[in-house]
Image (tube, rainbow, N blue to C red; front, top):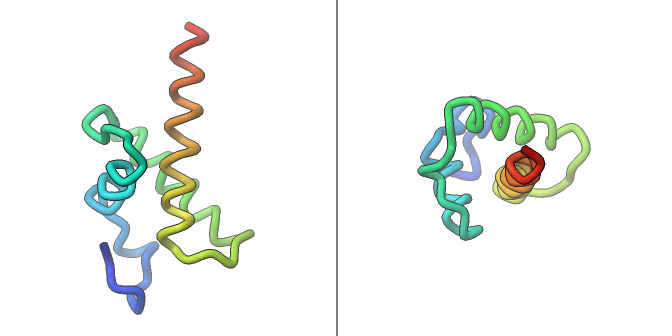
Length: 76
């Protein structure tokens, strides 16, 4: 994970997202490039309304994206 003193939006990587996904019990090997982009967008959007740490926001972005993707797969 990146140092808390770094600017996370400029250094967010797939590895950061994978680390959080694994911590949540989500298999990041199933993520596509589009998944990473959507998680990144949700992560950055989270800064506009949150007082949480960047890692909390990233965790919520990964979790939310995974839930939404699973719901889409169930409706097909």
